[in-house]
Amino acid sequence: MKRFPTGFFATVLTLSVSLTAVPTETPIFHAAGINTGAARIILIGDKSFNAFVADGQKIFINVGALMDAKTPNEVIGVLAHESGHIAGGHLERGRQELAKAQIMSVAGMLVGAAGAVATGVSTRHNNGAVGTDSAGMAGIMLGPQELVRRSMLAYQRTEEQAADRAAVRFLDATHQSSKGLLTRLERFSNDALFQTAQIDPYLLTHPLPAERISNLQQLAKASSYYEAKDLPALQTRHDLMRAKLVGFLGDVGEIARRYPMRDTSLPARYARAISGYRFGRLQESLGQIDGLIAAEPNNAYFWELKGQVLLESGRPAEALAPLRKAATMAPSAVPMKVLYGHALVATDTPANTAEAIGILANATQRDQDSAEAFEYLSMDYHRKGDTPKAQLAAAQGLFVSGKYVEARTQASRAQAQFKEGSPGWLKADDILNYRPPPTSGIFD
Image 1 (cartoon, one colour):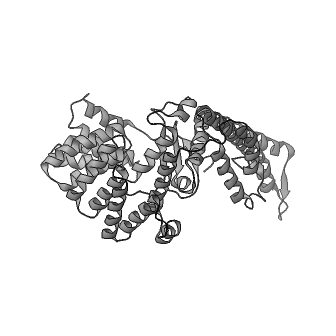
Image 2: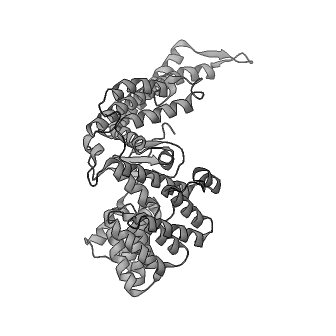
Image 3: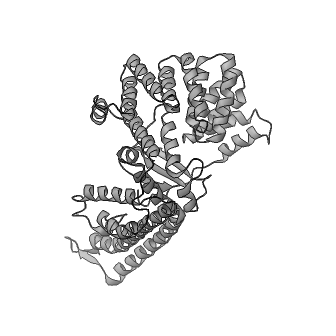
């Protein structure tokens, strides 16, 4: 998975909330009956258009899906579809289907083997001996497996259609249009026009795009909200989000192509300011950022960008004021708190060390999946001389990053210094006792 620049998620994750929320409610999730406290939207550093559900109520969405979507409604449609998978319990049912498929596969292979013996599938070798025909045997053995595979794929296609229908219901319930979902499917259809011409539709995990469009069009267009438009403020936020993604992830050519100099819009200026910083034009970038702040002095993300540029250019003391301002303006944006905490740690002064511990501890409580927050918190505790908490924070950061062996090493060291049964001891114990779930590898 691609590691994003520091503070990168701030705009995007806040956008993700805004797509399903106004301002603290989450209508799509509520319409789907999803626990908003447990649901998470997680970005993947892949520029292709894709989204999927995994691990309970986690929706994974490629950054390419956000970069490609021209309107917020297109992304809302995708999130509504994935919410349909969660609401329908498709993951659990899929596991049950997989378990049944494994049993069917083994049973089929045993029947195939018995059939081969009973019918005497054999061949005469050059020396006149008679033996089992391996090709014929393989054909008999693989037949049941192929039927099982097709059965599983048919099940997946049925669930995809169910999620599409659920998405329309959720969008109707929240007075939003299904047009964005159809727009995405139409683009998929155009992209897949030549790719699917020679593909067996029974070997696909999803229905063919044209089939999905046909199934959804009548249902979507019957809604009284089909012509509903995105709010202008949401469209502006969406455009700024796309500009941030392109600015951080695009190369010079892509940025110039998407946001040429003749484009004086705020998103274009935002992308070019990021590009200037990324490609070594520091003073030019800072000047452009100051221009953005002058245009929108209450935009927390412009202040965040200024602080990030100063911090990552080796000027942490100068970064503190803009980052403090950004974190104050957007108190729910945990990545901004982490970036501000990082700047405090980087100044390496006793007063800032104390403040950083408070900021970063709060950030880790609000987002326990922030590896960066745990990393900086560990550094801060180490400077303070609190070794057990430093080791525990290091263990938590490694655990979040999936480095379980290293996490257990740090957790063991930390636990040995905590009183048995204390909160720190129990947190370390959780890491020591965790074992990642095995993967089946059936369709790898």
